[in-house]
Each structure stands twice: as structure tokens, then as C-alpha cells.
Amino acid sequence: MRRIVVRRPGGRSALELLEEKDPVPGRGQVRVRTAAAGVNFADVIVREGYYEAAKNLYPMTPGFEFAGTVDALGPDCGSSFKEGDRVFGFTRFGGYASAQIADPGRLRPLPDSWDFADGAAVPAVHLTAYHALFKVAHVQPGDTVLVHSAAGGVGSALSQQAKIAGARAVGVVGSQAKAQAALAAGAESVVSRGSHLWEDIDRAAPEGLDAIFDANGVTTLRPGFKRLRPGGRLVVYGFAEIMPRGRRPWLPELAWNWLRVPRFSPLEMTSSNRAVMGFNVVFLTDKAELAKEGFDAVARWMREGRLKKAPVSRFPLEETAQAHAALESGKTVGKLVLTF
Image 1 (cartoon, rainbow, N blue to C red):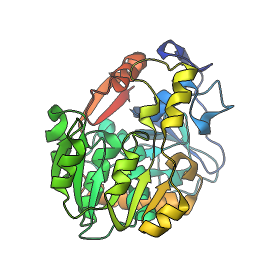
Image 2 (cartoon, helix red, strand yellow):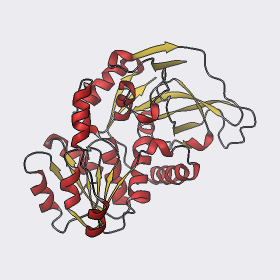
Image 3 (cartoon, rainbow, N blue to C red):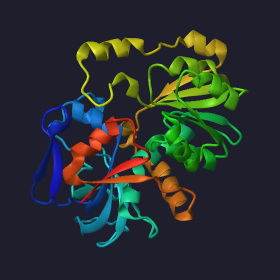
Image 4 (tube, helix red, strand yellow):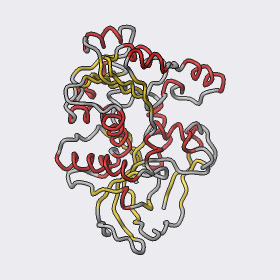
């Protein structure tokens, strides 16, 4: 098999392509011949060595999601999958590899109308969105929610699923050029980041917000919190603003950005009846029932045609560094996918 390995954290030159023997599935496992693997901003943080869940795992292969064909079953597999089945799935790490050893519980059949690149773009972002909306924020029909980075992978998934939940999503995008992508994903209205961001949000949601989904992590948390209705939830699932765009940070810069992250008092939250909540879906992948509930819902919505395919930019495995560079630029829309 071919796989990308990061021996030591670093810049894009740390992404090394290796060729090795195919792994053999163990008891109860299946092997998937990978056709495509999703690329997420978390992979960049993994490569740079700042991702908490990846500490002490180097050398390691990044990647959380993939799609391909089952090509081997381990002893006593007992799953409903057979060789030749088209599947998509998620993994804790290791997605950037042409063969995956997987627990059948982390796989779902790929609908016939979805190609492998489309399928590989689904698991990480839609499981994150599902957990944020339904398990953390408990969004209800009629709620108004704010989605930052609404043209990106998780942002577009949040907008789609909010619409399925009967909520109204206001999307925030980095530039007006991304507005149409956010609207196509399900946002009912879109505002662009800039000097008038919060005035525009107030016009789009004059009665306040029931939930905010924020992976910026620094400048938008405090102003967003103030715009929550009583009972509202600020859900934080990333800290993209701590990391500079397109280059590795230096430690004083990281320290300064960390100090800029707002702190919220329990007394303040209690007296205003607003909550700040955070999670990292990677730490939930070992909770089988949580993962099953969300993955079953996502797979069902795909079959029913309720989930739209994200815009996908494809990169051959050999161009993984270019894919990371594109993602770090902040100019991409939808998902980036490696192809095998």
C-alpha cells in the first residue's frame, strides 16, 4: 500500500510518501482498498504537532475519513459487508493510506449515486456537525443558529443539518465570493466577515441567536456570546485563529493568541442563562453508541437525498502537500480530497 507518514511534526515537507506491504485484517476486521480520503484542517494541526489527540503517536499517518471498496475480511468478521462492497468510513488517524483496516461499525455502505470522492468528504465533517447540533446544542425546530466558516467542510455540514432539524442558519463567510456556496449548503442568509460583521448579524437575526457554532476560537467568541438569547448555547469546536495562515507559527505568537482566547465565568453564564460548550469529535470515536447514532443518521440522509454533496477539490496522493497548502490559504470552498 501507499501512505503518507509524518515522522516528526513540521511544515508541509514533513509529509512523506511510503510504499509498504498491505496490512492484514485481524479478527472481526475488514480491509478497505481506499479510493479517496478527506482532508481536514485538523490534519494540518496534526502535521504541525499541535493536535492533542496525536501527541506521542509519531511517526503517524494523518486522516480521519475515507471511501473505497472492501477487499478482505478478517477471521470471524461476522459483518454484513462482503468483498467488493463500496463503503465510506471514519478512523481515529491513518486515512491517508491506500488500504484501511477498519472495524465494520465505522463503515457504512456508499449510496450508488455517490462517488468515492463525495463519500470521503462526508464522515468527519458530518459527524462533527451532528454532534454539535443534536448532542451538544440540542437545536430545535424554529431555532436560529449562527454558523461560522459556512462555506467550509464543517460549516456547510452544519447548515445542511440545521435545515434538516428545522432550524434557520445564518452563515458567516470569509469573503462575498463564498456566499453562494454557503447558501447552496442550506444557510438562509449569509454575512461576510469584516468591519460590519456584527451589525450585519444583528440585522439577519434581530431577535438573537439560539446557538452559535464557532471554530475561530479567539475574536468571535465574546461578541457571539452577547448575542445569544436566554438559553442560548455557544458551541466551540476549534481554534483556527490561534494558527497563522499558510505557515508554521512561532511559540511567542502561539502564546499570545492563546492569551487572547476569552474566558467565561460560570457566574456570568448562570446569571445570563447562556452556556459555552466545547468538544472535539475525535475523542468521541471510541464511544461506539455515540458514533453509531450519528453515522446512521448521516448515512440515512444520504440515501434519502436529504444531504447534498459538498463541492470537492481533488488532489492525487502525491500532491498531499499541495492540498495542505490550499487548505491553509483559507481560500477553499467545500472539501478537499486525496485520490488514490
